[in-house]
Image 1 (cartoon, rainbow, N blue to C red):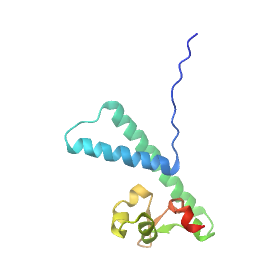
Image 2: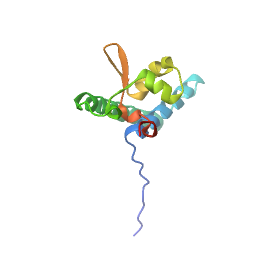
Image 3: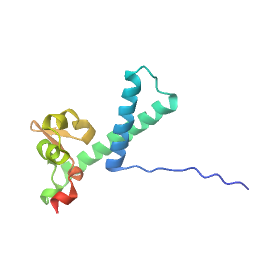
Length: 121
């Protein structure tokens, strides 16, 4: 009896969002030079988009439902995330969806799990 094994990759949280961001960037690059995506590439991008959106929505619901705790548990502002990432606030705002950001009272907020743990301890 021959047994075939299929490699499986499980992505979740920030890793899933990063994989989606990279796949979307590759798709945009292909489109910009006129190379169409293959069917399986489009299907993969669709699955990553759906899973990434679901992950962001879950993180946002958890942030809204969580009781305020330590500052490490509170949402990050665009300013905090920009300083941590070493980019401008405007860059963070332009890519807010990539980071799972949402607007609250006119300010961009981001999931606390993006906070650099080394900086908060």
